[in-house]
Length: 167
Image (cartoon, rainbow, N blue to C red; front, side):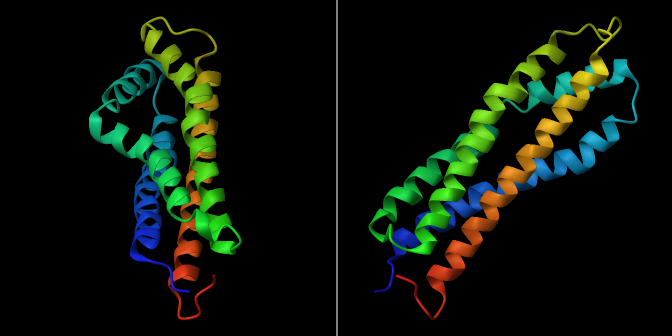
């Protein structure tokens, strides 16, 4: 039985949203974070705080939380295929995004963001480098979670749309 456009469309939409977020986290980790390791504490505190504040805009929130919403929609649209490998890839990708990005960010990255935003750049706490390193490590984990989620969505979509339909 061929899957319908709604099922594959919701999967493709989740893939797109998560792909954008995976790219965002990847770019930040492998470009911005590396550059920020080269600056002094005052510059780090100022710029990191500005990044944290300026990322809070509607487009970011639509994609960030949209990855979770799209995951749930894709799972629900494909639930009738719960006995297939592609369905479990979709479910796993959604789980990874929701818990590895949304929940993890709330539990780990946001507290670190709030801490750096509270700093006076001219009088940094002695542990500022440890906070920076913890934030960088946490963001690297978000790259991993988003990248795995993205890859699983790709595999599921390829399996679902290949000539040999798996159902």
